[in-house]
Image (cartoon, rainbow, N blue to C red; front, top):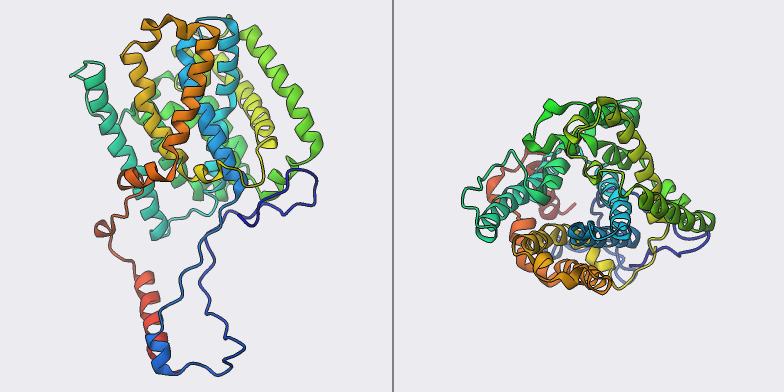
Length: 402
């Protein structure tokens, strides 16, 4: 990538705006051919290719590292009862890995509106994969867990598919967050109310949709200069003691705290706590998550790395690694192989999780599963009037000699 950022100092190239690619412009005439091409030549010449949107290495690096932490967290979950250290690591990572991923999703949703082409992309890139993977996970559970009664329910997301339905809802509400005066406080208020409302139920996993909402809204409100602030050397140095302090707090809280708070999928009453604890924990975890997410971003490389290209396939890694993560529980690997709970076994589990999710983000895997993750589905949509008008204008400009 030609616009990669230098890792130190203030003088690097600023982060690019999250925007749609620029409209195609006519090619400049060559200095050796000052005269315009003839009508016949212009009509027969192929149309110039649309400029390819440049990807920023920082965000691709951040997405890849976040998805690796997600996979590691899922691999650590059965190990949290082996000791306080494992549980402390688990709690620390769960404090910021999904908030970081959601914040980036919000940042790149800033240009979303109800334009037909963006709605089509939302359907094909989020809604369709949700339906396909919800069905696939259901059949997988029926087979791997020997549970033929597991129903197919598009209203009750199972395991990892909650993120897709949440992203669908969040992105649809983007225009609303653009017009309110205090979007982040409003989103926090909604999250607090959700955490004290046990009657919300499991439909569309609304507890998670609402309790994770503030991180998406923070991403919507962020600008490139906010990420620039994290490049300062002082911020990077402060991030180290902050992470160390977070691990120390997590080590102290491990035997005292219910880790289900980090999932944001239940109300306080459902976790056996008084209603007011929901408000306190929602605000406290939001603050801790924002701080650790900022520390995480401070150490994400700004230049192209060997794994930068994998940042474009993180949703593939996220959804596909769930089959192995759940299969390991269904098939009793953690129970049958007790050595996995030993320190060297935990290290091996961590490395395997990182390697597996890395492979699932690679271009060959993306090509195989693109039919499910990024279907074009041109047959399902009619072309809107504006798009047809643009095509007619382009055709007339090619045929006209002036």
